[in-house]
Length: 258
Image 1 (cartoon, rainbow, N blue to C red):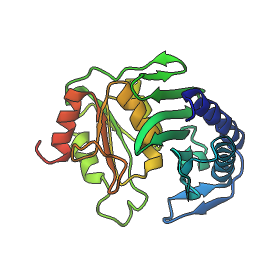
Image 2 (tube, rainbow, N blue to C red):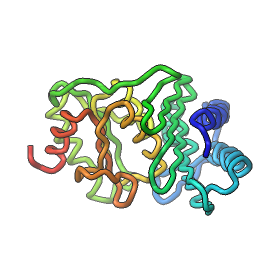
Image 3 (cartoon, one colour):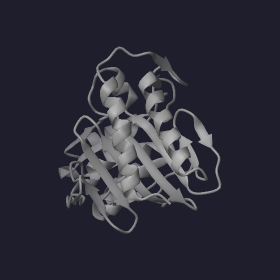
Image 4 (cartoon, rainbow, N blue to C red):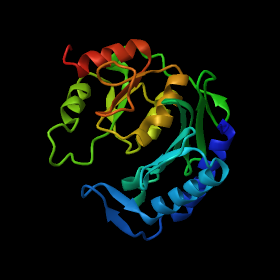
């Protein structure tokens, strides 16, 4: 099994690739939807991570955003080489590398690295969450009206009515404000750091939230799906993260009880 330090090293090394590619001209392709982008830098960072993992932990499986599943009979790595590709492609410096490690379906290690701010968020299950080595704790805000929230929207927001816009409107008139950064991994880490008070999103993928979900939980957040259940990694995916008191208030809004 890798150590948390191993994941931090890999994330920082992948971050060097992202930082070198930032602000350059890119080869940009669309995936399933017009706003679901991938750049050559996504692929370069993922290729680096896959090669490193397969060389040092050859028995492990890998679930990666761009290349899919790589089978193995050990633990599982869940990798997003560039979370926030749309930001990256437009020259917006809000994106990250996200790496999680799971055993028997439970995420044990998680690292999210922001190469533009040199911020490395990390957590090991049962041992707390840290930012560049300093302990993290979620905010103590318990009143939704005073809470600064963050969310995101699915790639087919143009066409699919299940697009989170109704939830955004509900929270916009009940909270201190709602932001959209464009990186689910960083959204969760910012909840862990107390920068945001709560986060929710629908229709995600495991690589979006596997590492960040653990980091938020280890910083004291209650992290569930939008039905209040513990599993936010299995389809249909959704996630809600906040301190326990605020989580209950947000869940009530999301379930139409408020």
